[in-house]
Image (tube, rainbow, N blue to C red; front, side):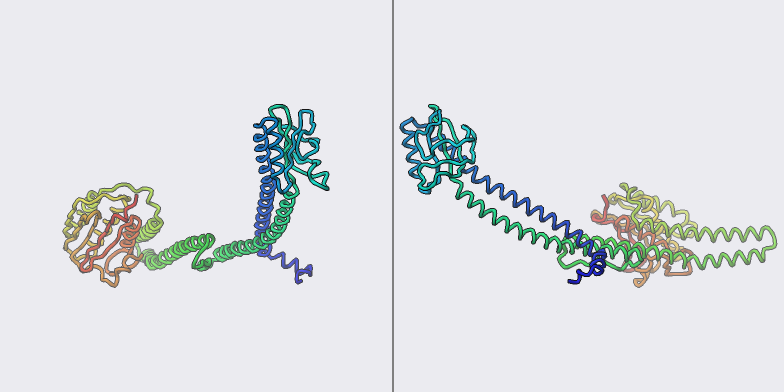
Length: 463
């Protein structure tokens, strides 16, 4: 055998998978072996006690039957019971209070058999078994009402033979059971070790930076494979989060490169060209404005990330959407007047929702600000709150053509701008989309025109 070589055996046993297999397999095998031994012992006890309980029930019946008879009837009943014993395995005898035999097939009460004890295994001297002067029996002695003693018993030869058969069967069955337990334990241990090893390999790959590896899940998964499926789902989510972090980092690096380059060039030019204090102050003010813009971009990105992580749901409360939309309209009325835009608000009663009021008013404000920014100069911006069944719909529209159908899936991405002739970092609609997703709302674009709607359906409300 290849394990006969000590070096090969040492190398084989040094493999952690082999050690894990033996460890798991040994534990399961020992458990199954202990179970087999315990079950065999219980069966043996039940089998051995069954005959004793049956015999003692018969002894009590004999004592009740014979004790209820008068002296003459008692002797006749005793002889009849002996005659009816065709197998010659019953011992019945009647003794007086001094132990003298009155009638029956036993010569004397054996030593150690006490009156009133449930039963005792003892050697008897039968009187009606030709060629047999001694026999082993289970006996009981009970007192009769007139002081006599009734000895009743049963031969143990057949019971012992039956117990020997049971004993041999148990030994054979226990041996096979132990071998089966050892085999099943090793197989189950190998399988458990393989499963644990697969998780270990997965964690090693994850630690090494490979987020694409997954655990195998069969078509009809067992409990471990169901756990593997949950682990795979967790890893999918983890991969998405890591990808989002990388994307945010790339977005920040990409979006800040141009403003930082412009800021650096402006500062260099200002330091070179500024001749007096006023010129220096003008350069500094322009630099501060540019820095504020950059800080706003970073803050907006972090805010989107916070909303995507659903970190704000603990602050949810019941919100009156009518009051919220009215506040948003009032907030933007001065800006609309300054730009020569007519801000028209049509607010109906709508069902209350659960959410964060500051976030929802921020989403509505972003929609209104986009409508005023991208709509025709001097046009009209319409804000409406309507109830559709038990849902609430907030719609913002301007006089323009709106977002082109081909760009509707792009405008909610970070830093995407359909028009480059307007100020902004392209984060407004991505922030609105994040707020809508957090609340379970839907962000919808009209098939025609510029209307953009926040739709709260009953199934999307959060308790």
